[in-house]
Length: 508
Image (cartoon, rainbow, N blue to C red; front, side, top):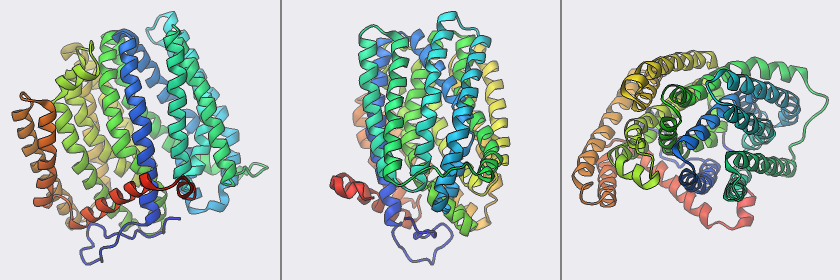
């Protein structure tokens, strides 16, 4: 188990001794990172292949339906996953009481989400075949609910190796089933049927893992737990609903205003942006949530110092990626999505959204842990309103690139608000600003090198510019000295996890 107090020096603790992070924290992060690298890598390659099998118009429908389902999935979740993560991580003995509660409530909420999706399909300017596809695809909402509730329990008890293994297996099964369906002429309908069947396998694997971990529902259902989940979960659910709607509203508006093909260009750019966010942000947040939850309970100051430190690491990792993808967007889009001529212009702007959104996610999660989920909800609602309004204004005027501009402006406004709520003291604020400026200076030099070398060879430009960025961040002290120790420890944990035997991995 992870220790309740963080065993690494934080921003503002200059006199603290340098110690590595808890072994279990590094191990859990490595397990999830490896699984995400494998599963997202395979899935990304598959999506690229799928884009070649579908026209931009069909790919736009595929992306829009996926966005609608992702938004509706927040309803059965109802914020309960985060509440379970937080509470069961703090009190593992209550696992059974929470499991019985979500087993009753979340499937019922999934039915509500399914009906809501059908209603949205009738309201949108879609044709009948698209509405039928949406009704079929939305069945996965009910199936995935069962897998997700067991997933939350396993993560709360830090069974990261089990969940990571299931993640990889599920993606492999999904791709095989979808490939068989599409290659035999099943089209989008066959794709969605294959997705549902693969989801059933995922549910079975999560149930087996939970049973082996001793996670069992405790009956009869505890009404106090139900009341607690609803009371604490609704604001998280509302914030998540707004958040996911914010991520996908642009596809729906683009489909309605500009047509299927333009939505396809946006979907293609979103695939790249989403993959970067999942790899660099979501995996770390999931792995660190139990630790951050206990830290927030015991020492709010330490939680904020950890969040600040993770924010700097996130900026240092994401900024060079954003610079590289934005600079080489034309080449990258032509290579990954041939035939999607409008993707490059969207990607050049949308990739910068990832830097802002990943930092925003960090501070949003910390505020949720501090039980300020209602404030986070307000921030997300305002960001959604800004994003929607700007999409409606910009799309008819500057085309599909306007969607990327809208997302970047809306997310930046939300991040500023979250940072104000953080209320850092003067030393912490100066450290954040100084380090961010130094990291940005290193990124500026990297951008110049990329621009100079991209006409010669894009791959050469990346190979030369990335080490320059890393070296300048180190020379300019863009990261506190102890952060390099943390990075080295996590890399070492990653390598050890790759080399570890299966029996050692199963004992984590």
